[in-house]
Image (cartoon, rainbow, N blue to C red; front, side):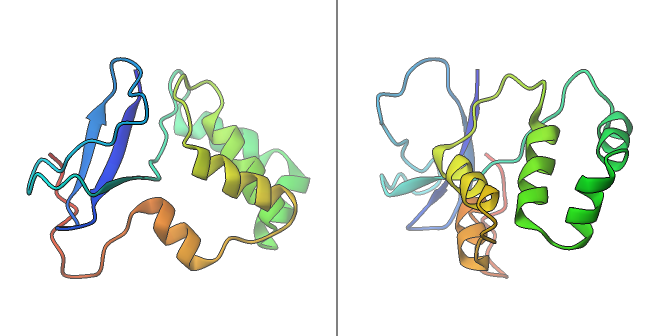
Amino acid sequence: MPIYEYVCQKCRHKFSILVRGPRNGETPSCPRCQSPETRKVFSTFSVRGRTDRDVYENILEDPQLTRGMLADDPRALAEWNRRMSQGTDEETAPEYEEVLESMDRGEAPSPETLQGLKGEVPAGDDADEES
């Protein structure tokens, strides 16, 4: 069962929801202010069954990938993300897939795009609290 992260557009509170079944496009209300104005944000992924060392050794053993990463090649970063996600049962957000596809074309995402995916909030805001 996936866990989705949302941010409230009204109070900027970031919260997570465990989805037990289809949501039919429903967006949850904010647990802090009850506002219905929330949006899904980019979530990190977990790697199960492998240690971080196993994952990184696999990546570092690929000279083409490491050269691309050192050269800030968006295609290499997209491949790195895919390798980090291998073996997980979690679904990725459509926005995440769109960014990976643009990186596969060699397009670097803008800082604004990445900030929107992560759901970052301005400094000094306490929206990093988890519910």
